[in-house]
Image 1 (cartoon, one colour):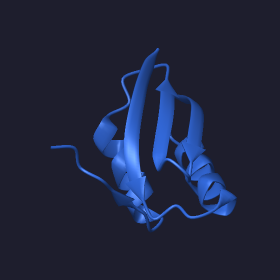
Image 2: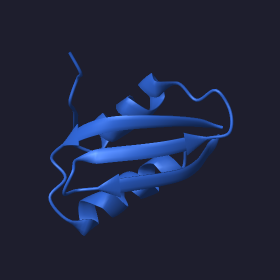
Image 3: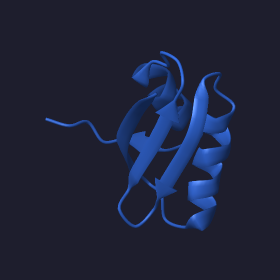
Length: 70
């Protein structure tokens, strides 16, 4: 199992959390998704080698922005 944590800009409510959870849950290999609009964090647990880029692209595609770490 692998854990990927992503900082997301634009989540403002529980509905936003659900949109992200639903979108990421469709990716093959994603086991669990947690999203918290208050902290802006999305945690993804995968059972195979899911690329971070795939997860980030999916989040971007549904209208949210990834906060890049320095």
